[in-house]
Image (cartoon, rainbow, N blue to C red; front, side):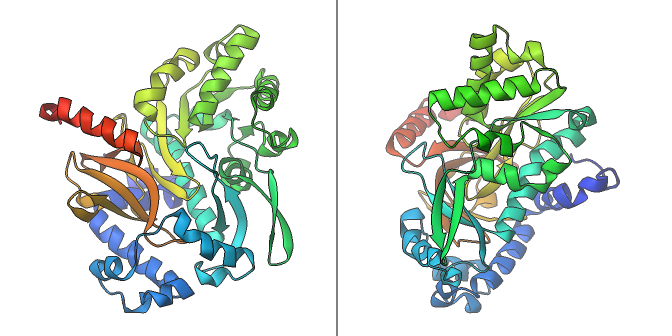
Length: 378
């Protein structure tokens, strides 16, 4: 199923523990929770919820309530004043913001450990694809960078003025992997065009990316899925050619929205050619899963995050869900315990999952209707 360990080479630190965790998710999740609790013990939030007394997974769910961004806000206000230990096990490195595509933009802290997890897990989809397909030529070309700007607003933390921006651009700018795998254009070039996200702003970014990449060996695109699609449409409309006619894409690595394989992939291929669309389940709060093989599902990063699902029959660990079971995804990370990410997830069996969409009434109604119509095939 996985590449031989001897063939992982320099990619072992990025991909090795993920493969191991898929083989034994129960043991991996126990180790992750044990490490997370040690971090929570350092925070006042963790002390208030008796983190030091947690010995079993059942203790964790009993002691720590499920929280969401609204409930985090009072703690984040204290972090902004300089008191990070109210809820964070370590100092923050920067602030990042969401796109606000489903509501007001959220602004969240990012710690050193969180960033390291983002960089490691964010690279897994690319590395796994290269190893599985033996497509090392992908790494010799340029990767089209279509992320949001990372320089948008300022805030004052602990008396210091700090600039922050969208998480996708911030993570691209800080990721040391991209010193080895060339992003085109560089995130700094994107930021130089300004923080706006109007149609005119995006057209300036797209035109700059087009001009910079025109005579380059572009082998992939990576970024927010609707932006990649908008780029393809812009190039066709403005320059009369599809991206597939200008560059030799090997794959598209698509993030930040739900239903990538079912909603976006067919349309993307109209512009970029019949290439693999590799799904990455990511959010500002973390990179939680990525596509393992050709099946249109994602497989969790069991070795970095602790996953629970609140179903209609109670809360279960993610890996315990049987095929067809679904519910609200609850993620415990190096920053926040039992965080309701706001997504609904469904098990497809054998550590494959599908992110249904945001936890909203239209999504719930749509999914229940789908299941009632196709229950004999599930």
